[in-house]
Amino acid sequence: MVRVIPYAAIQFCAHEQYKGLLGGYYGFQGKVLPPFPRLLAGSMAGTTAAMLTYPLDMVRARMAVTPKEMYSNIMHVFVRISREEGLKTLYRGFTPTILGVVPYAGLSFFTYETLKKLHAERSGRVQPYSYERLAFGACAGLIGQSASYPLDVVRRRMQTAGVTGHTYGTILGTMREIVSEEGVIRGLYKGLSMNWVKGPIAVGISFTTFDLTQILLKKLHQMGYTAR
Image 1: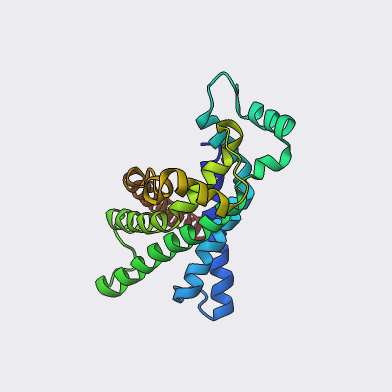
Image 2: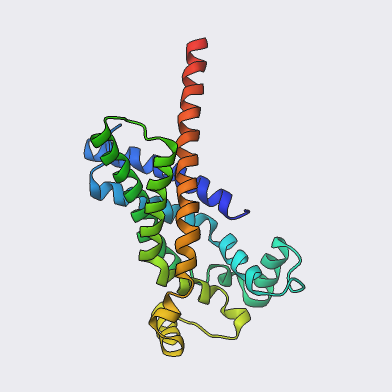
């Protein structure tokens, strides 16, 4: 939760800002962006969130693969990693993370926004129902996760190298070692089927919650101005 909350908040906030900036640049202010800017806005939002919250992701990965006795709390993880392995370790695996976030966030936001646009054109309703938003978000999560999963595996391996006994240096080197030891499917796509169950549900809920919250806040904002 310590990592998810700021990551989601920064990502959705950044996406709205980038949509506004790109909309003004391409002449689509207040409208649905064309395909390429739509993809770019999502990628930039994901990259921004990942850059600002990466040390928290590193700490989460470490705590997930170590015994409870090794780290007492989040601050203890930060302090111990900094002392024993250096501050640079907090950003180990950062490059594959960014390379994975670009297609993941880009395709997720692109798919969701595109499905909403197509729905509005076909149905004549500007706002989809909640269950339709959930379905659009689930499709977005499924596509984004499938496209970036191998890089996500590489990121996790590099993050936990200090406690698993491996010495992963580069992205390509890590990929080669995983493939040589475990194979392509069993190595780079390990756990993908479980993520196909969890990921789309989580992404669908995230997109739906954000949309409905944004609509509610806009209504409250308008009511405040009306009351004045």
